[in-house]
Image 1 (tube, rainbow, N blue to C red):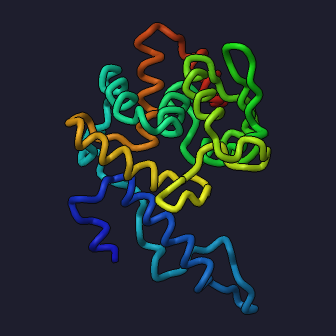
Image 2 (cartoon, rainbow, N blue to C red):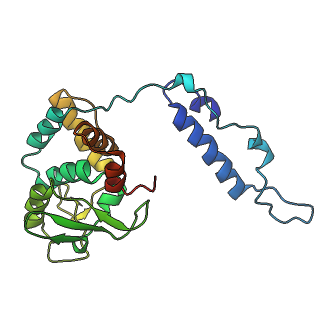
Image 3 (tube, helix red, strand yellow):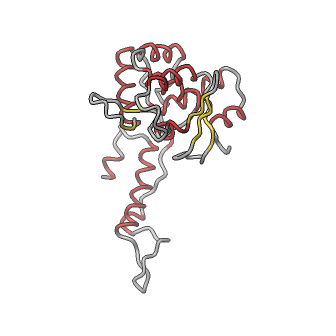
Length: 223
C-alpha cells in the first residue's frame, strides 16, 4: 500500500495525508499497550511508527484549475437549462464556502430580501456558524428557489440531486464534480471541481482590488 502511495500520480499532499491517516487508523485497531495491558493513546504502533509524513516539496506541481472569468460565464451559459447548477456555481464563487458546507444548506437557512439574501451557516461549517454572502449570486439563487420543488418545506435541502428519478435527495460534491467535468470537457476549458470555485473566487476578489481583510471576512477565516 505504501509503495502504491509513492507512485508518480499521487500528489505530495495526498501522500502526507495518507501517512497521517494510516497511523491514526492503526492506533484505533491495533493500539500499543502499557505494562498493565492498558491502551496507550500516546504511542504510535510500532509497525507504522517509522513512516514519515514529510514529503519532498520539490515534487509539488502547480494546480491546473485556474479559471478565467469568461470561462466561468461559459459554464453559466452551458447550464442554462439547469437553474439549480447555475445557482450553485454563482453562489460558490461569491460565498467562498466549501462544497460540503453549501450542500448542507436548507431552505430555512435562506432569508430573502429585495436584492440580496442572508444565508445562515447553521451546520457543518468548518469555521463554525456564520453568514454567507449572497449579493452578486442573488438573481441565480432566487431563480432556483422559485423553481425549487420543495420550497415550502423549511427542512428540505436547498441544492438537490434531482437525478433521472427526481428523488429530491441532497446534492453531493462527487455528483456535482461529474457534471462540471463533463461541461468543461465539452466546452474545452480548464478542468474544474467544486473546490476550484472557492479558490478561483478568492483570486477574482483579489484581482478586483479587495484587501486581505475583505477576503478573510467573506471566507470566514480566523486569519
